[in-house]
Picture 1 (cartoon, rainbow, N blue to C red):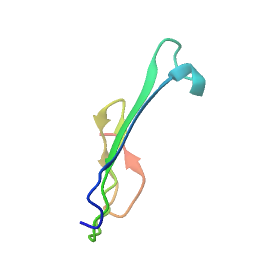
Picture 2: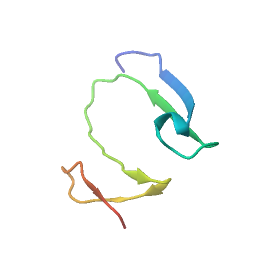
Picture 3: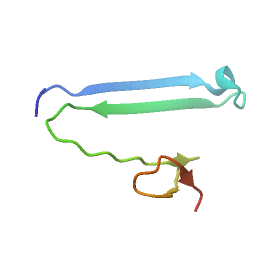
Length: 64
């Protein structure tokens, strides 16, 4: 562990700010901590439903 503190951020905005449905919200919650390792994972979600990745190195996600 390179840095003992965890970076944590929580945010919420009205969806209509970004062209979404009025009265709904877009929320994001992130926690990160620096370490000396490296591992790349791309997890794709659509409407809170995990999607299948096309290939391990691909950043394109396909629906199930």
